[in-house]
Image (tube, rainbow, N blue to C red; front, side, top):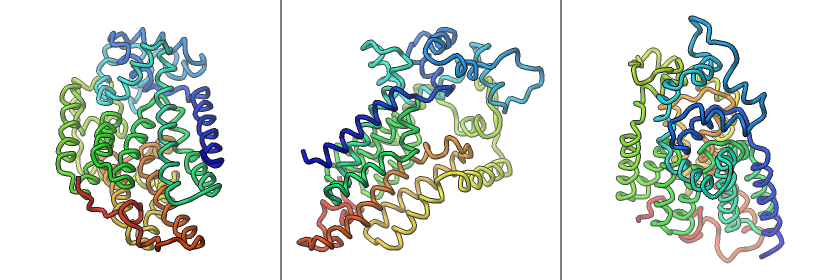
Length: 384
């Protein structure tokens, strides 16, 4: 192993350990995941486990204090969390929203049964997934960029804040990123369609909204069986876990928190939908990295014809995701688009720096004419 690769591996291991030891506290979702992994349908036990695992200040922020005032608006996050902590029946009604990520739950359960505390198991899944993503980043970039330049570029990519955030959070985002990006890598860069398609399908079991990217990718690659499988996996998971309807998933974070979703009927009218879409999209475009990566993607599309289809796929995924679930939370927006952000960065580094370095080195063939094994030359219609 060459020195730049060793240095990158050391950086990746160190960063992974830091993310494991410095997790993000105070995310309510971890209470739900802990309850599901325990499989005891006991909200009180999940809260007790969490209380033993995180600083008291963060725990108090998750349960609030005092009683819920009469008539308090349920779009107040603190009111919602207090209600969950005091009404076990309301808490259990939220579980279908989290059961639709069985791969994350299963990975956490395995680590828990191996002896890790449940809270640590949740975070370790994210950390290990981040490490896996880091390995794929190096494998992808080192095909086009060499030596210490590869080390600098790969390090810059893997230390992006949106990736570090997912590595430190007890959420399925990091696992979804690792599987989706790995799947795209094996199909595009290695022509190992079966392995790549399998990883992409698994990514849906980690994050259901990965279905958008997977469907577009399989359509463009003319991979019919994986396309049908992706849709089947998504709907089967939603059916067996009694997943929420799109209207409830939309209404819950964007309109008012649903304290009793089983008995609540919601209706999303055109005016309500469009107003939320406009407000949230404007907010997320102004206050997050969204415009930066969209601009980078458009620049690649205009300047590098052979990457046009794949980058359009990434931007199209962001566009469709925002149409279905108009993210407006500045603190969380980047993690929802993290797989597409990362893929755009990898393509940009490969075609820009890779082309320049190959040109300076007097490569045996022009970068624009690299065969099927090259990311820039990879046809967008590779069949399974």
